[in-house]
Image (cartoon, rainbow, N blue to C red; front, side, top):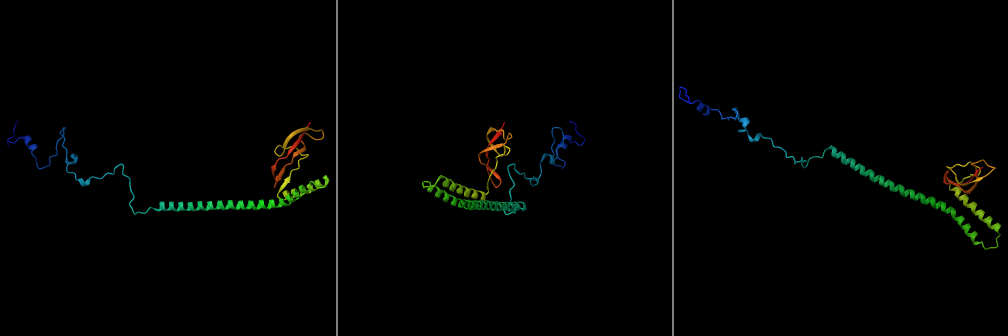
Length: 210
């Protein structure tokens, strides 16, 4: 190895420190500084990291916020309205039941005189009453019954001589007739009735044909 005139080796001067920290040399001959090697970095500069399984928690004593307060108020209002509606439904049902009882009582009380007359008629069936007088008494009771029913809104349907309507009438059978046009009601097998204008029983009729 060649030496310089001062007698010192060149490699020795390189390896011996020149007052600067040793940075180290990688395999490519590139110097690595203290920041790159990680040496000398203070521990306090490192940021703590949250674990993935950790969840944020509210600090005790903090306010729930206006959104939660509004939700609680709406929930309380909903429960109050629900209770009021349930009370209204029950009260309405009781009132309807009470009204039905009144109507039923009023209607049945009007049938009691008719029932009394029927009891009298059947009680004298073995007396020396002629058949004509007996039938006449039954007819009076029938008229009394029809008056009560009419007062309650029941009405008889008049169908003889009308054109047959399948929506209103119920045809039992057809009968040939030269005195009527085809499709005319010529006889009534069972009467039809209406209640306050609404059909509650359709009449059963006989329809003419040629």
